[in-house]
Image (cartoon, rainbow, N blue to C red; front, side, top):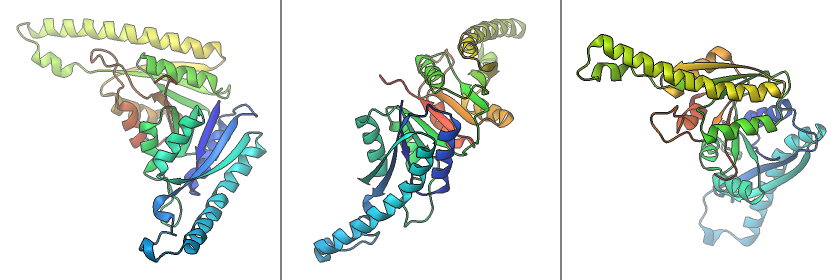
Length: 303
């Protein structure tokens, strides 16, 4: 596994370092620590008529920005080296989203790690709004960090049985997670309450019976694929449990997460397209945006 850690000098970058340490990755894991100097800071953040800027002034401004960028990389790189990671540093120039995504692709990165928020000081290289765009458009898995736990004890995996969910399961199994981690598997089935009122011709009692049979069939299928996933984690020595909930997936996942208080929420980047199944779809993006916890969005390399 090769990891790209995007930093901007904010406390969220520090949290990202702590998260990588908490995952207890193999000591020789390769980590590229990267920062991006946005285009608007090429001249020190000052808008000047290009004709009036001398080559010497541009060179001086760039050297100043380069120095600041290297200073931002120094702390995270040293902290990860002390943990035994193989660390390299990288300063890029341009649009942060494009640079992070392009470098991840060029360097065959397995996981991009980035703080969910960046610094508010405009003189720094803030990744703030960049994180969610990277999560949305990157072709590899992305970990958005909101807290840097000292250890991973509780992992919350939302799944719908799709190939995308299976991909994030494989990713979690390959990390590897600390053996003391507890894995909670959840799926959210659609609610049929509105459909009950619209069912034609049949009387209420018959409608309720039809609905009950439908829900029972759905729940049986959901428990079947959850138990299959549960067994995979148990075979690796993890303690695993499962929840089958009913309702709008984003809402159910966020409510359940607040109850569990996990160190990490994980789900696939996309779900099934069949509306009759356990749809996650764009749920991943909404969960990542509104969650108070760190979120791992898993992607298969072939996506």
